[in-house]
Image (cartoon, rainbow, N blue to C red; front, top):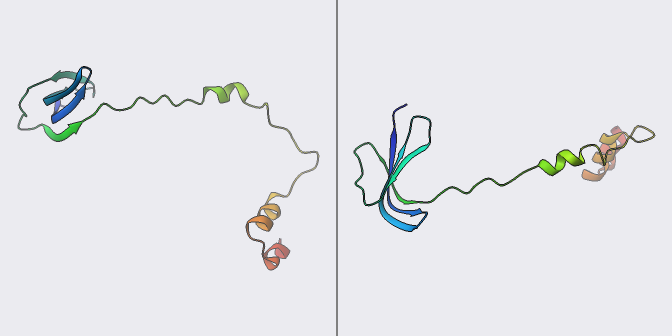
Length: 98
């Protein structure tokens, strides 16, 4: 994959808003350079505004510590389908077929 460029008329950078910004992306998909007051190249993707992506700070780590703590077996098996159908679809005909 060849290096790619994105030209933005306006971009939000570390030090604030900048105009005419050229972002070069290397072969591995990483940002190689960011140039202010640049000119678009013939093969660059042109956008009006460029913003940094939000970091994904979402995590389920706490669930690993809780795994299994709230699970317990019922003393007698529960027939779940009749229970769900009776509540989700309270039609007497449908309930009587199960």
